[in-house]
Length: 412
Image (cartoon, rainbow, N blue to C red; front, side):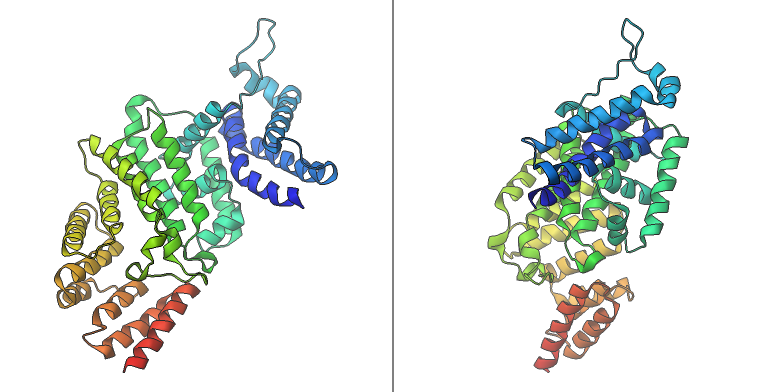
C-alpha cells in the first residue's frame, strides 16, 4: 500500500525532471521517446515495488532505471545512430559518449532551458501554459482539461499541435543568447503568472483554490530567480506577488471549500514566513529602472498583508490600482480598484464608478455592487446577489452567494 501512495507523489515531483534532462539530450523533436522511457520506468516501479517492496532510495531507483533505459535505447536505435549520435561528443575510440547527467544542477538547468523552449514566441500563450503544465509540472491531459474547463480530447490535440510546432521549428532546449533573454523572459513570466492565477482562482473541479498549480508556478519562479542569467527585478516582483497571495491560502477557504472574502478572513492563519519572503523579494525587485505590472500588483498584495483597516492602507492600494490601470487595463483590476475606492472614499463614490464599468456578464461585478449597496439600498443588494448567483459557474461561489441571498432576505 505504501508504494501506491508514493508512486503518484514521485510521478508529480520527479517525472518532469527526468523528462527535461532526456529531452535536452535527445532534442525536443524526440520528446515522445523521453516520455515513453520515463513512463515505462514508473510502470516498472509500480510492478516491482509491489512485489519486492520499496527500494532504500526510491528516487535514486527511478533515476537509475530511467538512465539505463535511455542508454539502452540510444545504443540500439537506428535513428540515434544515424542522426543523434553525430551531434554528441565522441570518445577517442570513436564511440558516442552517451552518459546521462542526472545531477541536481543539470536537472535544474534542463528545466530552466525547457521553460524557455516552451515559451518560444512561435507557440501560442494558451499552448505555452498547457505545455508547462504537461512537461514541467507533470500534469496529464485530463488534469489540464479540468483546469481549463474543456475536454481531454481538446487538450490532447492542443498539446500534440504544440509539440509538433516545437519539432517543426527545431526549437532547442537552451537559454536564449544573453541579448535575447530579456525579451523572451516577459513571455516566461506571463506564462507563470497565468499558471499561478489559474490555481489561485480555479473554476475547475468546483475548487476555488488549487494549491498544486500555485506551488508549481512558485517552484519554477524560484528556479528562474536563482539563475544569474534569468534573475531580474520583474521576476523578483512576480515571485513576491505569489508569496503574498500564497500567504493567505489557509485563510481563504473554509473546511467546505467555500471562499472566505478578504474582510472576513482569520488573519491568524496568514503565513508570516511567506509574507516575510514576499517583502524580501519585493525589496530585491526595486533594483531595476523599470516599474512593471508585477511590481504594482506585488505592492498591492503587500498592503493586503497588513491587518489594520486604515485609510492609509486603502489610499495606497487605490493609487497603485490607478497606476496599474494606466499601464495595462483589466476589467478585474478595475473591479478591485472600485472596492479599494469604497474603503478609501466611501461606498457612494464607489457605486458611481462601479456602474460605469458595466460588466453585466461578470458575477464578480454583481457581487461587488451587492456589497456596495448593502447598507444603502437592500433591494438593489438582493437583485445583484441573485444576478451574481445566476452567472457564477463554480458551485462554491454559488453556495457563498446563496448564503448572502438568504441573509439579505432575512434583513428585509
